[in-house]
Image (tube, rainbow, N blue to C red):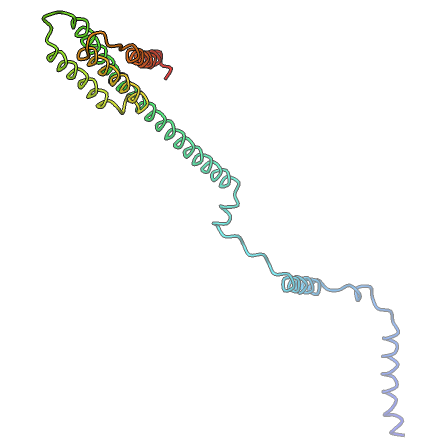
Length: 225
């Protein structure tokens, strides 16, 4: 009997339990708490940060370089530098051209002066030689003295063209030298050979050489050489 009475409360307790479990749960039992939501979000963000590493923050120098104003300043600096180099090169070329032109101008002035002196001396000595030959027919004429004077005049001509050979150029020097050689040959033959000797051929060569150097002089004066 005692055992039956002892088991009775157990049955009652079971009944109460069953009755409690059979009652429906309230709606709030299915709504997760706010703490659970925050924890879940934090965990999710943490997992995302682990999977996708954060980009490093750009340094100040990189920030300055990437700035549009910096790019503009660099472009302006390069443009200015390139312009300065071009202007310097252009000015240097202009100065070189001006210096070369100035040198050529001075050289031409000196050349004209020197060649002018050559022509003046040749004309003067040719006049003196022609006068000696014209006076050769006189009875009181001193032939030896005239020969010496002609040698002196021709030597003077050769000296001045040799001195100014650089300014004359080799071609003009050679042609003037040919004329002087023919001139002295004709003058000496005119003074020393027997009267009546035919000097026509020698005279023709002398006149041809003279025409040649006169042409050179004319071209020089006209600036055509």
